[in-house]
Image (tube, one colour):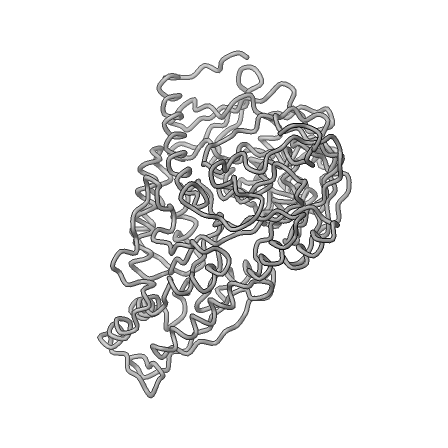
Length: 592
């Protein structure tokens, strides 16, 4: 393939290699299920020593695999916020045009069904990146993937009314793009706006949907008409993608929030080629129901987002089921709403998070499923990462030290009337605590412990469970005082400060130094500097007692004993779906 000319090509390639090396060091050390971990389960024991190849085996040709998913997707599209949920991403994973994925050791793998090689850095000022498309990469019906698809996604995520009228994009990627042009050969060149930098430039999502399908569905003027462009975005969200695929499967049937049936995409040229006749993703509510159907043979596997540890004993007694439990990408935490009049006081927040015993909470909740659960000391990096720093230290946060918590309050002028804590103005402190209870065995335990621990310093806690599926709306409305949930994390971290503590964050926290850090992160190309800046922002948030990190939460995967190449993956939000094209049924007649 013809080379794309680039200034200082050798130096830029070296910087890219260095970035990926740093990424591997930062991410690869994060796997608690690795050599020093001890996962719970049967049939996945080799994941301890061979995390990227465990549960491998020769695949037979054919078979109809049914997989349970526990999230109801409310849209089919991927370009707007309505389709940006994890459930929508998972149901689209067999066909969506991802740029890359991470494996369980933090190694980055580019999508070799679409790209001839990884993204190429052409220039730093302005940031310019080339994407080398495979000549035979198509949308599953003969049409090559090309520049129009990049431009459509740019407009969809532009946050610009002149490009996409009244759009609600899933990301702000397009707002930073200055131009998209054709390069030499089958190359698309993305140039970003002057001054914009991204230490993780190689990880940008650059395409979601086929522009020619937008035209075929009735929106031929999407390039010039922002209203029509917005209509095409809505169309992709409202209608199942039965007419295109950029992955190892293509969808042949689908009912929103119910099921999606796939068959292999015969035009797919990626290395992960499916041997299945079909793959069906079926919504089933709750791990218990999933386990029942797995035992009955009506499904072949599931990776529920939550589960009751009591299910593990039942699974262990099933000779036809393999299962594994290990910490994954979700990190659990309790946050304070600084818009609450009580919690606007830093001293009260400090006292609350000092009174909570994080070790006890983790042991009694997550420890029932995974005995080696560790209390988090850093909200961005796990122990072993070169970027890890102990951000809790001797701050007392999460220590469960009731005497220290009461001393903080007493020094700030708080008093007690009987057991009730009173503000310096004499008002009883009462807070509303919210978390999702339905279908989750861990959160009720955490809730009970929070009520108990904070009762010891006189804080009245009113539990108000979050109805299933309403976490996002509760967060957006700040309809809570204290809240417990889990963020889903990946090895990418450059935007963490902006996402967690920047302008418009869910806690109401505002800090000038953090705002400066967010601005610096948008102008740095150095991944080490980005890590240092994000760690500083995280430290500030903890010093200000905005949140209390708990633990990397354990996750369950369970499969029929004859299903091979399915394994969990902490390093991606897709978890087991990162290699869905490689799933299959064991060929027992072939030597392993």
